[in-house]
Length: 360
Image (cartoon, rainbow, N blue to C red; front, side, top):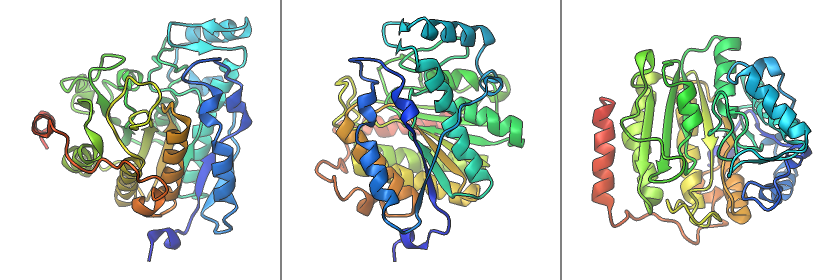
């Protein structure tokens, strides 16, 4: 019997047409990323099983966004967008509607978290844009305007008094913004697996936090070609022992899918498959069930091949609702990287070095 059939509460899907109003033109982070989502969501909602519900995002109040971002930055970004937008930096483009859309990106994730906390749903996936994990307190970068996942963690801390929040970030790029925001804060354990070397050039294994936050920042800078098995090994050897020691009260995931072997940026090569992502979702879901009554919220980060992104999001949602990774990803098993890469001895040594660094 599949766990999928035993689910008692639904999985919430957060989406809305507002996320199309962040116009970036011919840019990797464009409205085209979401083109296949309406069909996916319609299919899931039409199943008449009660496993999924759709929730409308809300616009986050500025008072909430100011918990992470400087007031001067918020004003400057608003004014720049309202004047017509353009390039904030070589990577980050905005339009007139981007400021409002970014507020809804934050608000969409917060709406899902509230639904989890009151018991309306079991877990949630906020299919929002723009992404957020590169955004710093006082600047945008790397396609990101507001740090959605950091704002969610701060919301849990300040509104609900939680003291142990685990953020899992499997985007192919290191979430430098999230790391910086909580670098001295033990109330957030930040775990990032990412390709190295790669933008933004941060995320080395010796970046472990400072002050009271020392030891609560965990980086896995992985070489190209690592594949599914390495990601699973990292969960077994590092993430799961960390969670057992930390006992999180809520788990947030920066769910980027640009580590997929088909990703369109062509600068990424971790070679994770759809099944690999589904397996990671299943394992983080099990951690949430073990330590925090299943309280789990994902927010969309990267992923720039529309087909690969759609496949991975579809599989993610089905796993969140209780289906096995193999069944959830059965539509796309053409290139599952189950074998260890040629440089596996180096990678295993790297994982052991990280274990020693964090006394696991």
